[in-house]
Length: 310
Image (cartoon, rainbow, N blue to C red; front, side):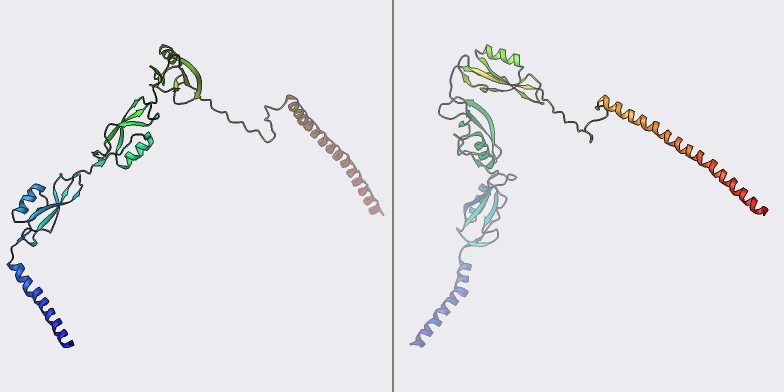
């Protein structure tokens, strides 16, 4: 039984060997085959025609984006050029998509800050901003966008936005007062059937004194008649004077009272007058001692003479 099983296995292995080494090469050799043509660098339409001319099929594969090359240019092919394949074999081509397009996000209902962040993530930019009164969208939030969400655009495309200016309260519009002189701003406000509200002064080195730095409500806001407009006016910035450090004695000589100066002068004079007195006393002592020494010398000399006489 085992002997028969072993013989069967050997026969199967032999058949497989013959099939791979003899039958398959003969079949491939005698079957209709063709060489894959080189189509890299051709336009997709031209490559398709060249491949189909030798009895092969064409299938568009991946798309690679490259700004430096035209759209539709064949970048890669599989199987590669020169390979011997059967007829009707499918050849996959990778084509250039040109510059990569970016999908525009939905920005309606977002703030300007959020919209800017979302656009910059996609290499897009905020374009012109137009304000429009809206009861549905809060102030300074996006009401609509010119380029619709989902559209494909090139990188660095500017997306224009329409921003909510808040609800329309009246038929008057707040004028633009920034940069105007105070008196000119007052006249513009009264001519617009509005009235001046609080006037606040703010220190500034950038804007000349007397000009409007800011206003509330902002320009182009809707308002009723006699609506108050608060102004923020620039004024000259006052520099703080640093404190003068006091000397160790607390006062300089110029800041000393006159009485103290007089007393110090008198002390100096007294010192000067006392010094010569001391010198004179010392000189008197020397004068007194000198004659005494001379008398002692004379006495000694006399004694010596008397002694010599004996």
